[in-house]
Image (cartoon, rainbow, N blue to C red):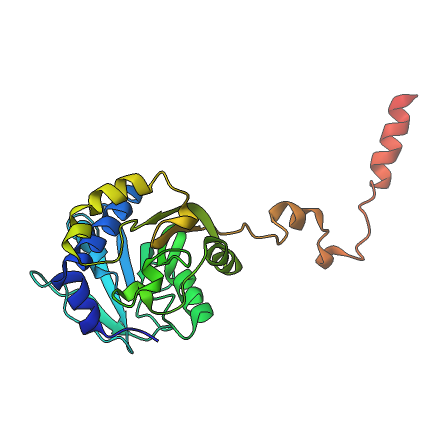
Amino acid sequence: MHLDVLDLRNFYYRSALGRAAQKVIRDELVRLWPDCKGQMVVGFGFSVPLLRPFLKDARRVVGLMPGPQGVMPWPPDGQNVSVLCEDTLWPIETGHVDRLVLMHGLETTEHPSALLDEAWRVLGPGGRAVFIVPNRAGLWSRSDATPFGYGRPYSLSQLDAQLRRHQFVTERTMSALYQPPSSRRLWRKSAGFFEKVGHNIPMVAAGGVLIVEVSKQMVAPTRPGLGEAVKKPLRALEGMAKPQPKPETARTSRSSET
């Protein structure tokens, strides 16, 4: 079940822990996609905290928010780009999205398979998507103090298998949020140290969230091409006799030989 948009807003914009989580995940996303100039960038769930770096250069930015969650205007200092929609019915034309981000969407939806089908539909050929979900082995999925403590947490193998079933090709995997999910001042002061050291720790045992980048690769059609069609005789000419030389031409040929 999706979380309430007010709870998500309060966590990411009005708490020190939420602002720290927002920055860590957003920095990882920007490292994955340093340049989205002229592209269409779409987020689903509650991914708007990650979309701000793309507002300047992207051709268009859209923040899709599921109906059970609710919607809020975003960004607060510019023209609104957030849209309320159904989990499995997005107001986006097929194949028009270049970059897609899902956070607090896949693990909380009641229809994950249909949601992934919709993500595949809107993504253009060669487009990229990033799925951000709670790490089943991490501390954040075990704490109700953050939004990552709700919904279905994933292991890397579970998420990868589910994405492959929907024809996504995994490009890169990583984890983030190595700091403890606590608002205590001691942990906040040492958050940067934990994030720096955490990248040297095995993913499954450390990070609070999994970040998986996938691409949409279109398979070439297997139907016969022009070469196969040319090899087939034209049925319209079937039954016609082969042309024969005229009798005069035949006699002329024999006389010239003598």
